[in-house]
Image 1 (cartoon, rainbow, N blue to C red):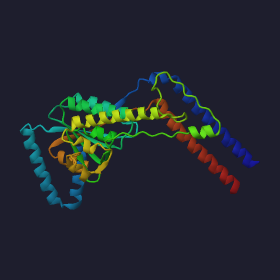
Image 2: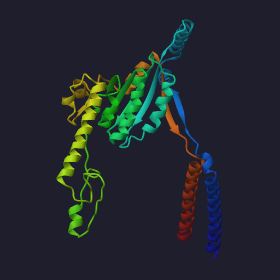
Image 3: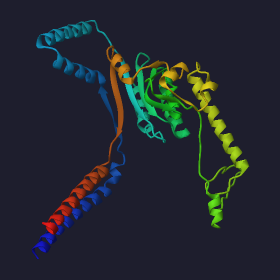
Image 4: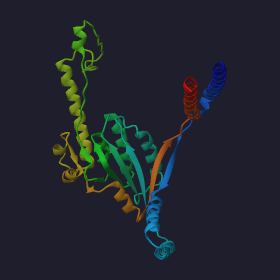
Length: 339
């Protein structure tokens, strides 16, 4: 009986807490309309400070006090002379694009490009750290168009590839006036692929009919459930060839030095071989390149982050609270049963 009384009391507290959370969520849902205008914010970090902190931390660990004092004195002297001379450093704006099949990162890339173009000039530089194995044609077409805005504005664009920029990823990379790759990054795959299963024979075997009704001769070429025809296959292949030709022309426009027919076979090359094919201009990691640029320029990393709504934040907090509550309840019940 004592166990039942304790359990009933604990259950009553649990129900009360859950009801309270639901009331709060309901109130937030009512106010949801007011929160729909939420946007995002642009986070800007100066990478020079990051590199300086790394360097100073190593100096403090390796050098003695006298050496450190002498170095700091020289640094202060150099900074004073630069300020007196009115020395203006160039600026480097760093963007990151980690692409999935839908090129979802375009959502923040478009805002980052808009922001930097409001300030950047031809004396500055944009560095894109790119990683993508490609994906949907229209999605990567839009992502590439965002980078083309930088070129059209006359701002130098450098693309750094540490791991992979293939297919749609290379479509983006080729827009850079300079492409820098790590020695074993994957590049190329200038080709188009489409594949889909067809279960028509399986359906036919089980006497299941599947009707495909269209208005327009080529509204559907190949289908998953219907019976595919040779005419449909030919049209589908024709569409792929057209897309491939557009892809080739796009790459050739931005990298005319390429033997485009030689490199547009859908093959991929590692960085060292890609350099020989002129798919890239230099072998170097993005870390090395940015550290070098930070010696003579102010380097700023930009990232546009979408704000979470109040409902989303409270919902997440409520979910965590419920998880903890259920874990506590299970733990206590476990103890009562066995101890």
